[in-house]
Image 1 (spheres, rainbow, N blue to C red):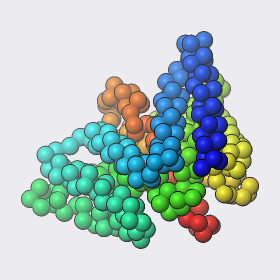
Image 2: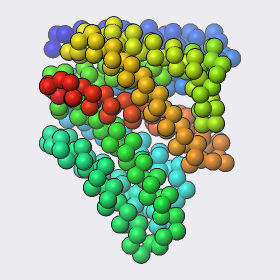
Image 3: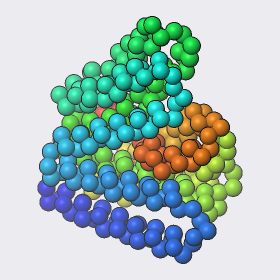
Image 4: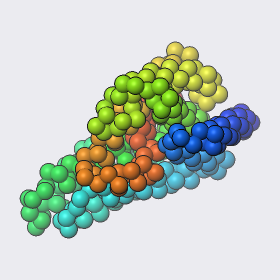
Length: 304
């Protein structure tokens, strides 16, 4: 407990410094858009609160907090889909999978947790859309719903399972993952703003550049090596590998969600810009980094 308190104090101090730097930079350089950076920092503070709840109270509190986050993220995703009346029943069943998925975490039934959405839900989900609802738009509504469940529910739910799979190290691993994921996004954004020249996918996300990717990859890997002794039981080699893996998967997560948003909101640029401030934009990278990092640690370490 004493080491956890010292870790929290250290993280709080670092976040306070970052918050101050963000405030100074946004005031002294008003011509540069630091909006995305500000939202990422807010995400850090939110995850620090969840870490405190898990450390000082009960993992169930953090599990419920993450379940609520998953609900709002999925809700924002569904708000982008152009729906018919026939799709509403489908969305209702999708929402009902959230408490069930987190219940498997609570009772620590890993086997059901890992197959419930990718197998059972995916096979059963089309039925409410088929029965007396016709076939028009079937493929788009079902596939887009399945994508939302896979990313926003299945992917993010891994954040909650860390603490149940490893009560001793779970909270630290979650914080390690979130800090590196958000750092990767922030460094990528800032580096692209200052000296990004070659865009990776200009049609879906003009903020992603090769220069930003290189800087984010190096910064995330270096940060992983610096903070792993305080938050994880990993070895130096696995800390470096984790940083590389989180940087790569975070990039693909951000890119995938950007493409999904662009595809679903074609012709609605105003709404696309508004969603940059949403929960979905803050946790887009975590939809990929959470399951990948979880299974990477579980495969090589027995404590998971």
